[in-house]
Length: 88
View 1 (cartoon, helix red, strand yellow):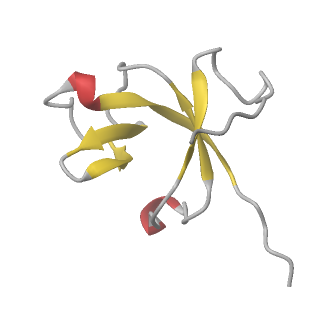
View 2 (cartoon, rainbow, N blue to C red):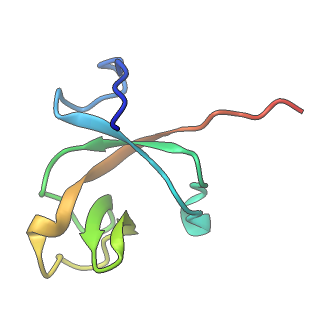
């Protein structure tokens, strides 16, 4: 089941923006399991952009190093990260 939550427009790029829960660590990007990434739904991304894309093993984050072979695989451009800090 998909959950919905309001996202302040200050954090969203457009009304098409959505949150994606990260399911594995991306240490090069300092993004970890449980983080929420703010994704601007668009298939337009430039080299160097971090995107959410559909790959052979599922949906995940990647940084574009060249134009994608299949632009329809890009679900959107990552524009922010939200992290919940654990209490110690």
